[in-house]
Structures are given as C-alpha cells and as structure tokens.
Image 1 (tube, rainbow, N blue to C red):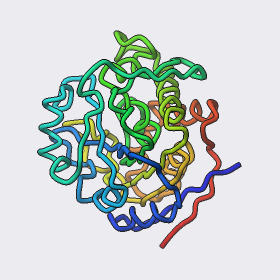
Image 2: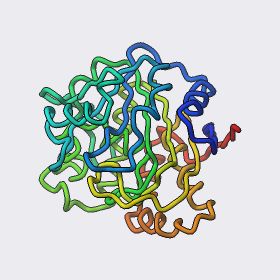
Image 3: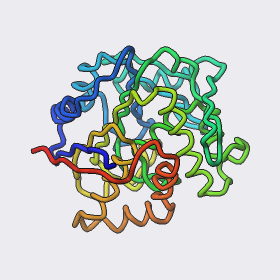
Length: 288
C-alpha cells in the first residue's frame, strides 16, 4: 500500500503551512517540533523565519538535542546560547531534550543492529512530534532527511554516539558503515513506536549542499531548489526526495549524487522499509 506525499515546487513559509494543513494530520496533545538548530558558522540551515508559520500553527515547542562532537552544540549551555543567537529562543519556546540526565531509553526489539535508543528524558513531556527536515547531503549518512532527523536528531548526545557506533559508543567514527546506517533506521523506528505514529514530516529541498547543517564549514548549495514535501510516512518522504534529485536536470546533480551514493545513503531507506514502519511506495500529489 502506497503512502501519500504532498509536494509543491513553491518554497515559502506559507506553502509549508498550506501543505501541513493539506495533509489533514492532527497531532494530539503537547507537540514537539524537531528541527535543526544549525551549527555555528553554517550558512545553509533553514532558520526561524522560514519555519515560523507552521510552528505558530501547531503551538508546539521547538526541541533539539546536544551533539556528540566538539562544536557550539555539544553542551547544554553552548547549545542554548546558539539557539538564542540563531533566533529560535526569541521566536519560540525551546527545549533541549537532553539538557539534564539521565537519558530516557527507548526499547526497540525489532531493531536489526540496535534494540534500544537513548534520547533526552524531556521527550516524555510530549505526545506527538512534527519533524521539520532540511533535505541535503551529509558527510557520513550520504543525505539528511526525515529518517536522520528521527534517529541522530532525536538521540541524546550519548545516543548519537551509540547510533554512530552501531551499539558501541566508543566506535563512534569507526564502526561498520552499513551497520551505522541500519542503526539509524532502528533508532528512527524506536521514536515512531514511542509516539505511536503521532508524527508528521516536512522535508524542504532548498539550499542543498553536499554537507549537513551540522557542519560549521559547509560547501555552498550545488543543486537548485526543488520544493517542499509533506507526509506522515518518513520512508516515503525521503524516497520521494531522492527520486526528485535523480529526476532533476540541474548541472550540480552529479556532485550531490556522488555524496549520496558513495556513502550508500539509500541503505538507510532500505533498512527502514525492512523494519516495516513505512513504505518506499508513494503517490506524489503536486500542489501549485
């Protein structure tokens, strides 16, 4: 059975809200809005002005988690300062989910590589999640979209090391690569199970660099903007983005595809589909 993915080539804050409304998905209770705060120095991340209409609509709380590597987001105090500098705290209620320990452990027996996921304990304050993702390349995952946002993005600082290390945090940068990708799929499944499917995903194909928003020094975008996608299926929405990249005629496409293919990025989608919490089959409904 295919998933529905809404798509518009118009990229504006208002169009994000329109597609959100078009999805018809009702997120119950207290809504966590997961997005990327943007590493200090990064020029490509999507900021508060872009996301403001849809966040205001949900009355949700912007949530983030600390990183597992050196930078401006690896401690709670630094991360909070950056959230202020980037305008998040000035526009929205902000919650660093792993600001205080201990981590909250999500058990996921179905996981192929990891059967548990470590997230900030403050996730327990929320009933549903709106996942706002900037689709682009990624130095390790090949690409970043909804599945990465659910997994690495929602994981605590320790949880990020646990996923990267395929269950062995000490191997954060040296684990078997496909096992790392499969661990991301496992961790995403754990978050989906926790929220009992009360999630909605927005992927924006804009400012598409080969590098992630976690890079303080990132390449400039190499592919022209493509559009906004909204779905309640994280696998379908990521697959649709990959397909749109392959279908585009932009001269920078080979550079982005080299990043995705050289890191076997599609394997995260394959592993997620094998776990059964979504589908790679979708109907793309284009909205003017």
